Amino acid sequence: MDIDYENLRKRLGVVALSNRMNIQANDHAKHFFGHKKLHHRSLYALYLIACKILRHPWIFSWGHRNALNVQVRRTELTFDNLPSVFDGFRILHISDLHMDGMPDLLDVLIRTIQPLEYDLCVFTGDFREGMLGAYDRPAQMAVALCNAIDSETLAILGNHDAIEMVSTLEAGGVSLLLNEHKVIERDGAQIVILGVDDPHYYQADDLERALQGSPPDAFKILLAHSPEITHKALAVGVDFYLCGHTHAGQICLPGRRPVFTVSRGPKHCKDGLWEHNGVRGYTSAGAGASTVPVRFNCPPEITIHTLRSK
Image 1 (tube, rainbow, N blue to C red):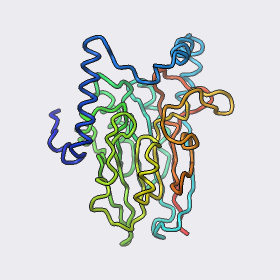
Image 2: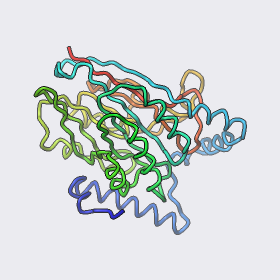
Image 3: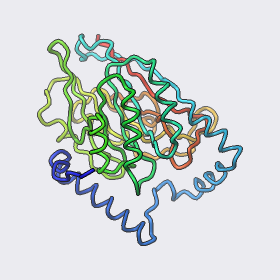
Image 4: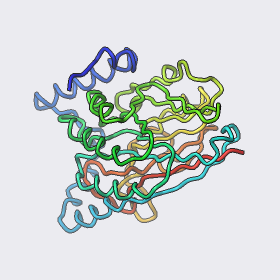
């Protein structure tokens, strides 16, 4: 599929697209010349040793079964400024699919989503497993999943996603928010869904751009791949911040104590519901698994957030 880079530039902004394209080009060049830039998790020797251990057949089989045991988590949050006509509005939140790394997850997710009721579905990035190479297959798998979703679907890109995936995703009916917003109306009242590009690896988020032209006093929900821009969210009055990226550790000690979480965000913002400096948010543990398709003491999830109005 042809890529319309001029359209992407207009949507993302010159700086954000340049950041993305430069990093993507540099990573591919280093990979081609035999100096592949490692994801910074790989800097941890302990993590590499753990990956080798986890690939032992018995341990891998156990962890892989865990990684396919997708849980439906539910939250209910009350907001003073949510318009009353949106009381009970349900958001299906899915994050970190890494579809091509665990192909058998697709059917599991379709079966899990089928009986659920919700008003809007949002994806908070990382459709792809690898950070280099082919991107068509994970995009097509994500489209197959979205075809099973019974509502409008909004999404953002994560640090594993190539900008070239946008064409396939949008052709399949997924609405990407590339430093953009979407207004949802009910009986004359409005809420705004803001979506920014990856703030973690590409640093391509532009929240000010996403706000341009949006109703200034509307209830604001932010989709960002990681919980790293809470200070920006606070500055523009975000009411609810939805993200993922951390996998809540993915491999945890008993008691859901993560061995590693990869995020520069505040520690208490790396799993589940949180509040930070007046911003309320939720960090999904993710539906998929990355690097090694296993999970321990940290089940995969999709989440339904029910919004309540005072």
